Image (cartoon, rainbow, N blue to C red; front, side, top):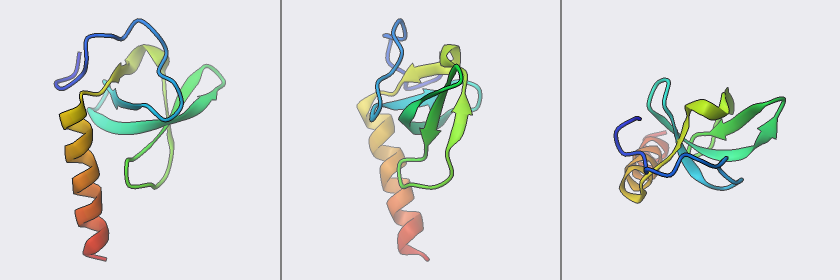
Length: 78
C-alpha cells in the first residue's frame, strides 16, 4: 500500500473521493468508473487518467491537503 493511504481499500471509491494511484503515488479525485477502470483527476484539475480498481487506495486527509496546496501553489505561479 502506498504511503499515506488509508487501510480501507475493500470497496470501490465513490465519485468525489480522493485516492492514491498505488502504481505511482499520484493523488487523484475519483471522477467515475468507465470500462472497468476508475477515472481520476488531479486535485487542482487537469487531465484525467485511468487506474485499475485494485491499484486505488483511499487517501489520508493530510495527503489530500498537501496535494491540493501543491496544485494551488502551481496555479498561482502561472
